[in-house]
Length: 307
Image (cartoon, one colour):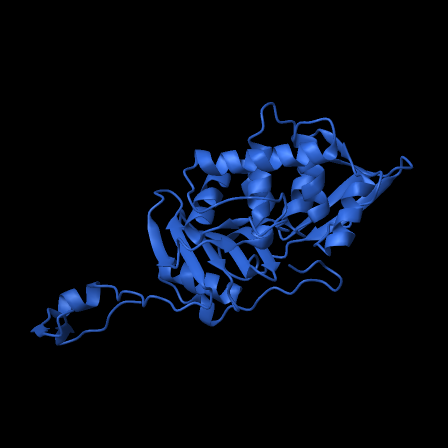
C-alpha cells in the first residue's frame, strides 16, 4: 500500500516535521507487526536466514507431528538414498498407530511401498505408521526397537550438527515417550530451512493431494489417496508447505512456507489456537500484503486425516 500525500510525518520521538509531497507518495507504509495466537512464533527469510519475526522464539515446546519434518530430512540425507527402495508394511506399524491413537496414512499390513511414497504418507496425512516404517528401514540394528532408536539418534545428531540448542527428539513421529521431544520456534525454522534444500522435500510438502499405487500382499495393486492436512496450501497465495502438528502438550502447531516473486519465507507457530491465520498474518507481514483478511481455508474431504 502506498502512503497518501501528507503534510506531516510523525517521527518515533513524537515530533512532527514537514514532509515533501513527493516523498510521501513514493514511500511505502511499513506494515504493522502482527499479533498471533501462537505462544511461540518465528519467521525467517529462506535465502538469507535473516529473522523477520520473533515471539518467544527460544522457548522450548513440544512440537507434535511437526517432528516429521526431521524424520523426512533424516531419510533424505541418508547415504546412498534410493527413493525407489521398497518397504513392506509390518503389523507392528499399524498396531502402534492404534495403540497410540496416532494420525494414520491407513497403510495395510503386507503392502509394499517405495520410500518416495512413504514420504508423502508421512507428510500429507501425517502418517505415524509411515514414520515408523521409515525409521525402521533407515535405522540400524538387529531388531525394530534397535533400529528406531538408532534412527532417533540420527535425528538428534542432525539437530546438533545444525547447532540447534533447544531441540531434542525422543520419537520418530512426535508422539513423545517421556516428554523429551521438544524444540523452539527458532530451531524448528532453521531445521525446516535445512530440509528445504532438498528438492524432493519441497516437492512432497507442497502437494495438497498425492495418489500412490502400492503392491498389496496378494500381489494386486492398491491405490492410496492422501490429502495434505496443511490447509494453508491452496488457501494462501504462494504457500508451498510445510507441516501441521497437534498434541495435548504441544497444542496446535504449524510450520509454513510461501514464495512470492522469488522471495520465500519459512515460519513456525507453536501452540496457537488459530495457527493458519497466524501463518497468513506473518507471511503478509513479510510480503507486505493483506491476504489474511480475505483468506478462505481449503476444506479437507470427508474422512480425510486431520492433524
